[in-house]
Length: 400
Image: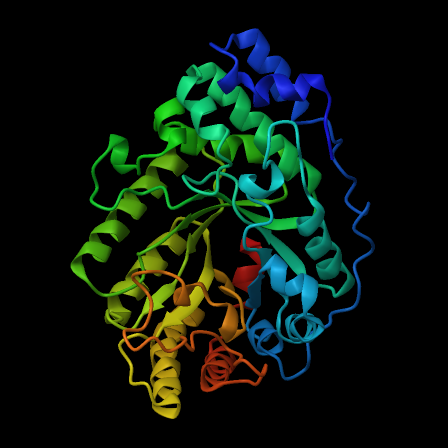
């Protein structure tokens, strides 16, 4: 969809010389050329729940949990069997890339919501809820945005951030249960301003960009829960424990400042090369819950590169590792959702990541369903954990 000349002013500012506040404000307004959608238009009415009585979602729901999955647009668009599996197993869906700026705003003056809209319509028709991923990240930015932010003044960058969140969160107002407002904001070593990762947003706006993004989302869609989504805070090694301490300190500061954050997300890309310390994990979740925040497991999968090639052995070890992690997760009353990063082995990102590939080159078996959409030992372990967990329905209903 092409937008008018006002939108092009901001989009091309990085190419036509120094920006003025007036030109950037005029251009930022173009981000809103598409009006916000009403809650029931054009995504259709909420349908009857599609998940099966023996599904992961059905097992999770008995204790107040929701099970869901990331859905890659390429697979969703072309594979009916995949869509059937998603409808059968999940009570919540999330786009992998289709709501990120690189897809929604790929070129100056162009906005594309087609893939995200399709998944939202699918979810509504199947009685499934949606998560939003992700509003502010140091990656998934279209090439034209980095130079724009590098040259912007702080007020100009704030205007751009505001218009971006208003555009995407405004379009899906009333459709999204929770948004990953910021994603992977901690630096790896604790360095940087306030321990934040180097990013175009930090450079343009300073450390306050994190609080600002939450405040903007709350203005745009106050019913959507704002979530800070973070990686590498789950397992039992000293450097992850240090990150957990930093998370707790930052959460306390955000709440003290009145930032409208309602949830913390653990990505949970669990690796077989690092142990699970159930005690440390339990304490971490408990301390977040004691702050009155909900917790989400947002991108769960199991990196199996330390396990043998034999499929039966490997699947058993993956299931055991998942069980040791999820039984702590499912026992915490503040945990609301457990989302796997896809649910179908052939699509896992682990096969393409240079540091996550198996040394023997075999495809990873990281997700609940295999290449034939059959339920694996991991699926059965997840269902068993959900089924045996304490019932925290009442506590979780309050946090939602």
